[in-house]
Amino acid sequence: MKNNLIVVALLLIPSMGFAQETKKLDSTAVFILDKMSALIGDLESVSFHITNSEDKLDAENNIIKHYSASDIFFSGPDKLMVKTERAEDEIGFWYDGSLLTYYNFNENNYVSLEAPETTLEMIDEMNLNYNFQFPAADFFYPAFTDDMIEHFDSIEFLGKTNIENEECYHIMASNKDLNVQLYCSNKTQLLPKYFVVIYKNKSNLQYQSTFSNWVINPNLPNAMFDFLPPPKAKLISILKNN
Amino acid sequence: MTAHLFNIKHKLGLIFVFIALAFPSDIIAQRMGHGASRGGGRSMSRPAPSRPTSRPASRPASRPTSRPATTNRTPSRSINGGQSKTKSRDFSGNSKNQVTRPSTGTKKAAIPSTSANGKRSEVKDRSTNKSSNISGNKVGNKTRVGNNNVNINVDNSRHTNINNRNTRVRTSSVRYSRPPYRYGGYGYYCHTPYYYHPYTPFYWGPVYHPWGFFITTMATTAIIISITNDSNDKEEYNYESGNYYLKTEDGFVAVQAPVGAEVPEIPKEAEKVEVNNTTNYYYGGAFYEQNKDGYVVVPATAGTIVPGLPDGGEEVKIGDVTYVQFGETYYQPIKVDGKDMYEIVEVKKD
Image (cartoon, rainbow over all chains, first blue to last red; front, side, top):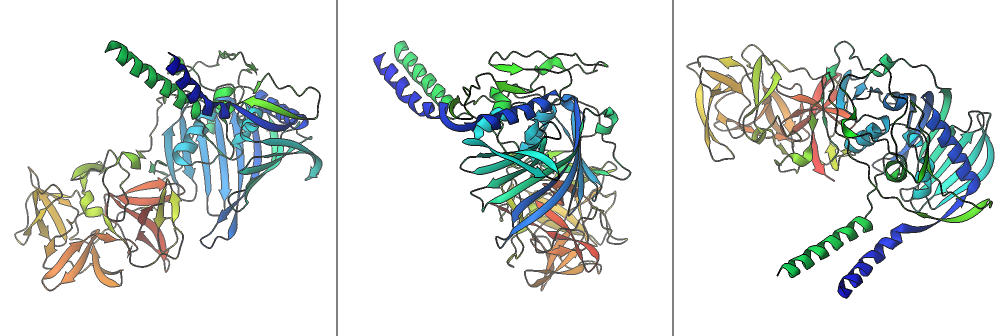
C-alpha cells in the first residue's frame, strides 16, 4: 500500500505542471474580450464582410501575401454560408445543419459531406478532416475569452486607436509561438474590426483580417443555406487530410 | 495469485490515470486554440439521439445545459449557444494582475453523423489503404479500388476495371523546379502549373474501346497475352487493335492495358510522349516502350504530359486542387499551348 502511494505521488508530479500556469492578464483587455464574446453569444444571426491577407513562403523562402475577401452569414446554431473570393478562384460553403457543401465556382464542381449538428462542431470537424478554412471562426467559439486566457501567456490592453474612422480598443495576446493583436470597434459594440496573427517561430508570417459591414440579427431565410447545384455542376470525391 | 493479478491491474489503472492527466488533449481548430470552448466552457454538443428525423417548425427555446462552474446564457437561437466564461475571473480591482488558472483539457464528445437526403461525396482516406508504389504514393480509395480487378462504377451503363498494379507511377528523373502542393502530409509534385478543366474521357477513334466495353465474340486477329499478376496468378488477355480484353462468362470486356504486356503493334493513333528524356507511345491510357519485337506496356512515369485520359478515372478534391485519379495515379489538369492536357503527379510523403 505504501508502495502504491509513492507510485501515485510520482505519477502525479508531471501533471501538476500542466495544471498550474502563471498568466499575465490585463483586466481591461479581458473585460473587452468578455463584452465582445457576450455580444456574439447573444446573436441569433449575423452577417459581415471580411478581407484577409495570409503570408506564405515560396520555394525560395520569400514571403508572399495572399489576399481573399469573404461574405459570411450565420443563422442560429446550425446554419452557415461563406463565399470567398481568392486570387485564383471563388469558393463557397453552405451548411444547413446536416450537410456541408464546398463549391468551387471556377471549376463548377462540389463536395457534399455529412456534417455535425452545430456550426462550431462542423467547423472543427471539417477543418480537422479536410483543411477547410472558415475565416474568423475563432471569434465564434462560446468561450472565446477563456480560450485566449488558456492559450496565451499574456493578454494586454494597449489603448485606443482609429481604424478606418472607427475608434477601436487594441488588445495584444502572446505566447511563445503567436502574437495576436485584436482591435475591437466602439462603433459596433466591441465587435472585432481588425486582427493580426504573427507566427513568431515561422519567419513572423502574418495572417490579417479586417471586418466590415456587420449586420446584427438580420433576417436570413433558411433557403440561402441550402446548396442547390448549378447546371452541370459535378459532384466529386475528396481525400481526407490524414 | 489473485492478489498478484489485482496488484498488476491496480498499477495499470494508475498508469492509465497518469497518461490521461499528463497529456490533456487539445485541438487547434483555426488560428487559435479552443480548448475551453470544447471542454472547459460550454459545449455545443447535444445529446446524440436528440435530433428527430423530421424537425418541428420551431425549435425548443431552451437547450439543457448543466455546467455549474460557468455562467451560461442560452438564447434560443444563438449562433454559438451563448457566451461561456468561467466565474472565477477575479482581478481584485487591479488593472494589471497575475492570475493562476487551471488548465482545461476535456475533449468534446464525438457526435454521430446525421443522415440527410441528397448526394454525398465519396471520402477517400489514405490511412486505410495498404497499397503503395515505388515513389511512396498510395491510392486513397478504400472502397472502390482494390488490388486486383475490383469493379468500380464510373458509368452505370457499364463496368470499368481498375487494376492498381497497372496504375503505379515511376518517379521522374527530372528535378522539379516548382514547389509541391502539400496536403495531408504528402507533397504533390508537377512541372506544370495547375489549370483546371473538367475531366472528359478521351476518344481515341473508331477502333478504340473504352474500359468496360463488352463484346460477345473476339476478332480472329486478336492475340493472347499471358500476364502474371501480383498474386502470382496467370491472367490471359486478348489484344486487338490497342484494346485489351478479359474473358467473362458471356464474352469479353475491355480492360486497361496490363503492365508488361508485349504486343507486335499499336494503333497509328498512338501519340509520342516524352518520358524521362525517352520517347514512349501513349494510347488508350497505356504507355508503350518500343523494342525490337514491338511494344511493351510500361508503368506511367511522373512528369509525363498526356493529351487525354480514358474512361474510368474520377475527379478527387485534394485540398484546393482537383486531380483525376486512376488507381494509384493522379493526373493534374494543365494547359499547354492553349490545349487542355494532364501531367502525371509525383506523390511523396513529406
